[in-house]
Picture (cartoon, rainbow, N blue to C red):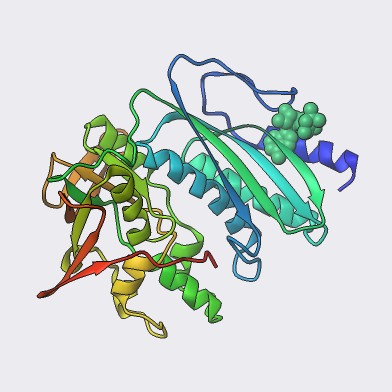
Length: 322
Ligand code: ADP
Ligand code: MG
């Protein structure tokens, strides 16, 4: 990319992205963006790096762009959501990427930005001799926020949706099966920001985290930082029909649910409910379902897994992202 095409690209980015935030005094085009603020600000960054977090053999440029923003939105959701969400976009572009592919990546980012009504307020661009890198910094306004270290014994544990699809989908992608709904879950996750906003509005979660490294690994972050244990029940963990019925996988559905990463569902604790429940989002005219999977117990950080009659103590396993 030469200097002229970099300017053209920034102009195109500036004109194609919609603006949703009200407190941006100055956005793309000056040396810094200017925001006005009177509330707490959530701010977070996630890198999305070729051959570490994704492979270009499995992902279309559009999907790369879309997922790079979704995983960032998920971090805002995990804090209980936010309003007037904005992001900065850093792009390191290797020589092997065509102009057309750059525009497809941007289309994917724009799709996620429009779905979740998020504004792009700036960024940076560079050529690179290394891999494709998308570096996003995201921020949102909030009054309250929900941390990981605030789970207490007696609280129930909930999930916002199915777990395991993404990990199973990744394995199928690696085996060369590029199409299918599990693969789709892996490449096009949802960010549970509407659910998070709705839960926060009703003051439900006491502690919360999003699942990026696997349910057990991320639940352990809650347990270790809070200083308590938990038990979860195999029969209560929501598994999709696609995962139960999938052929060609190396592990059982339960194993993907426990150890597979990148579902981007939320896990939260609360003392307000102790069985499955739903909440109605008046703005979107939708119900969200929350799945009861266990509870926090007064023990050191340990996780017990009840499978039929047996009780196991389980540990996180490492997860690689592709
Ligand atoms: P500078 O040299 O001052 O850093 P740039 O040419 O990098 O300026 O950027 C000019 C403007 O375009 C800035 O407002 C910057 O935030 C914006 N911008 C640059 N790259 C991107 C990008 N990838 N996405 C969004 N905005 C960008
Ligand atoms: Mg710059």
